[in-house]
Length: 370
Image (cartoon, rainbow, N blue to C red; front, side):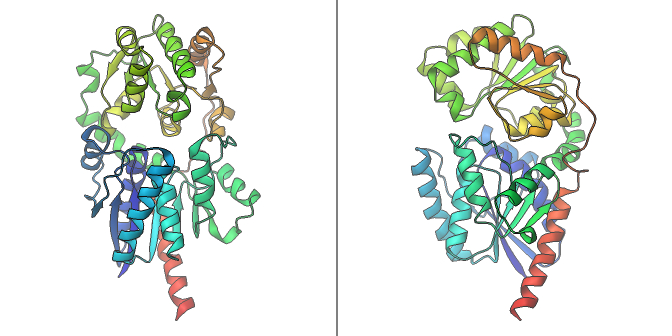
């Protein structure tokens, strides 16, 4: 029996892990230990995802969800290390680019446990983003790097990662979009509950620290969204960090008057909101891709994106933060996008490829040792 430790903590990681965990459970001889750091911790940000995505309940819940980047990552590193010493897994799987990702990778690497990184090789080339630092350091700790796109694989080659460690598998989030899309149609009633007419609203999400932690930038974004709402109703599932930041600058009540502000929603409800929006405005990497999966134009509320193929294919555009009028103009201009048809994220088989590669890698490791 091979013991694998999966380390997750944030909503996008739950989606990715759901697909890989499902594939691993189908492989004989693999035992998966689930570690949840607690980075996203309440029912709206975590529990509902576990139930909807058919994820196993965590074997270890660490409850670490607050503090600065350094404090949070340090506490996670200490706690994850303790669990790994107790469980003694033969490999650790981490996902994406959060503090959970970095803490899991560092803890495993320092214990000489191989790190397997799902969604490796992404680069924004903006090192002011904490996510960029997390990605780079995790990739250079990893033994197996599962790249979602050709661009991601090439980024790793350019950084000198040995070819044998790089595996182009496709995007597990596309797997999830295909697998859970029909379930969302059957079970979600979010459009009826919010009285939304399909293809007659904009969906917006804002949560990145680069937007929420800079008051002037946050004000510009939300003033722009409120202006855009005069042309197209805006639905905003609000992240707790964003709500707190708006409260701090005295904009929360104004935003609630101009936009349809709702609590965070589960994965199935989010799928429905994305599928039936006429436009998505977001600073989330995952939401950008999901917009593409559902063929919805997207305006990215950042000055760069890791998912450059979305720009190249004409499904996405970046929003200038010059002023609120410019934000409004750039967001609404995305309604005119007419993207090309392509499959840069694979064919929905990424999780199975990852599970098969892990099995093959483990067999080769075993034969090398013995």
